Length: 581
Image (cartoon, rainbow, N blue to C red):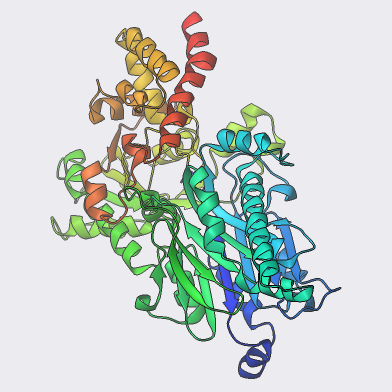
């Protein structure tokens, strides 16, 4: 219901045969491009703010371009990019990217891939990724102390400059080795191009970064790589045979594009890199020592394509896990309740929820109560009019329940800010006059920001945090706020001190306060919230234990520092001014 900007999508293809092979077998030199296009379209859910592609042609002769890039902005960026992809994109290495900004920065300058040029083929570097780095200040300082001057202050460009610097050192190492062997002229160039070790470059670059990432790259000399963060926060999958080596952010993308069973697609392990050399040799290499496994659970709840067989089962189980608290909320009255969901990502959890309810009773009444209506152009109106228009983004099915007799149970995959509930959903559901509205979330309460790629970085935007601060104010617990502020300000590295703000309250108390905060003025129907609990989450998604948005247990030091700083910012900018009023 509340669209979150989140992880980007990546796609890599390395053709392992001569281009003539694909033209003869598949009828077109565009075989690689066509596969790249399909992989990007199948990941369109991961990025609708921009897209870009890059290509390296290993057969280009000196004096001709060999590394190409095309980028575009907007939700139709994939189509725009491929409109401009012509014969010059005939090559062996392809890379694609779909962008969602988590920083608020926009413009073509910030659309991946990023390109670092040089007259030496091996020193050309093209990067894209699904990442958000939490210690960019420290890395920027390190670069400037080395004498570099990055053109933009962003984790993408700083990663490009640091890795490019390490690639330069790798090329210089090979140059010195070639000279020692007595090589001269183009023989030195060939030696460098054929012996670049991207493992060396990655091992000397990535230890400097803290965050969740899948980093992908191409070099002008023909190296291709993808590397995953050592905590396994961000996902990556790969496949190879004697024709291609491919990487994508999601497993079913590769399955669909190449018509493969699930067993053929492998997961890139935490801290591991997939490297394909200029001559097509493929290897996986452990670049960083693995950290405690923290694969993002939100991938399973919300972001990834539900066509993945494991994700489908997990989302169904998330819904089924909620049977007991839903039964309690409706007083066991299944026959007097109507069950629905908010389109569209919650549909699979809804199927699991109804499966669980049918184990209690065969009389489960399912209706499509809520419809997503047109995308209204609210930005052209005044603020008051915007709120009124926002209330009509969704519509209801009139007559779908018996007024004042039926409970209405609606499931969503998450409740983050609560804005859409307050401004739209609750208002239109109230028009059906249900006896009671039970709003269900298949994920737990989101209490903390994310700093690894999801657009929820401010504490005060989260309805659970606002509820906790409201309870603290009502109960005269200002000393707790001062204590947490002091710890966050002066001890930002040891632990997440913001967790102390939630400790005095039960989930039920927070639920009740969230309802008060989100309930529109004049609404008649009673509201009850039902959230997934942490135990249910981990039972449903056992292989994705990353739960920092729910528990505050950030896997990296940078995440801990960021959340403590977020509270300092909130206290100094918002809390103090509120207390003065």
